[in-house]
Image: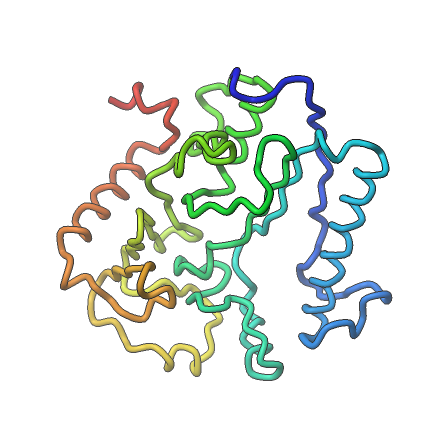
Length: 264
């Protein structure tokens, strides 16, 4: 607990609401400000709202001792496909999949953290993290010992934020629905089923990918971020390792490091 600076102000300013979320109804002040329809306008409004919060912190003299975290809860909703066709706006970028999918596009989201005096300016990290890690991280920040039945998959991101380590977790499970599972470790993402889609994927999108004849899909995200190439035949040992790891985590029911000793 001594790693974090003391005497800081730990205050929560929630900016959740419905921004940018269905229904897509941006405020009048932001209607038409983007080239991506109501969704783009709503994103612009979200950006302005974040700016207003940061400005308020500055005005209140709290900017230098407030931890600010900006992120999203999942990949884009399926109606982004219509924007792709009509407006040329591709919310998932190069990623495959959208919200509810276990493809990378369903789970990879932005995470921007500002904490003056702790996190360096323009500091970027390739560490694998999950939003579930915020619980253990913030508990550490305020010096709170989490009960063993809470935050069972949460890792303390402090070493990464402070630049003392390049990672704190080795793997991350992708899951939204009971029969759709994936696991990410290093550059590998294994889908423990034939594909990572769940629902509402237009035919023109499905047809843009080759059909997978195997019952699993292994992708090298370092060289194939769009998850177009299935390498399960070339790397059966990786498939076996990741399947065993996923099975172990599911059977154990948790992956938090503070609970690891009790699992053995």
